[in-house]
Length: 80
Image (tube, rainbow, N blue to C red):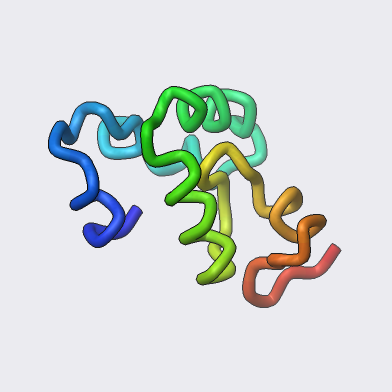
């Protein structure tokens, strides 16, 4: 998560990705966990939009790379 997005919250601990191993958000094995963490975050919508605009990999805003691809926002170099 970029500092630009993180600056929108005043309490760092309110953003689960700041205190969780990044692998959780970038591994298919942990998608369910990542999505659950994202759903507790007040930046869910902003994070999802950020990932869509920048074609990010991994789980962002409770949306996986595959789900973003299905929505028309495929990550860079995505192959189905």
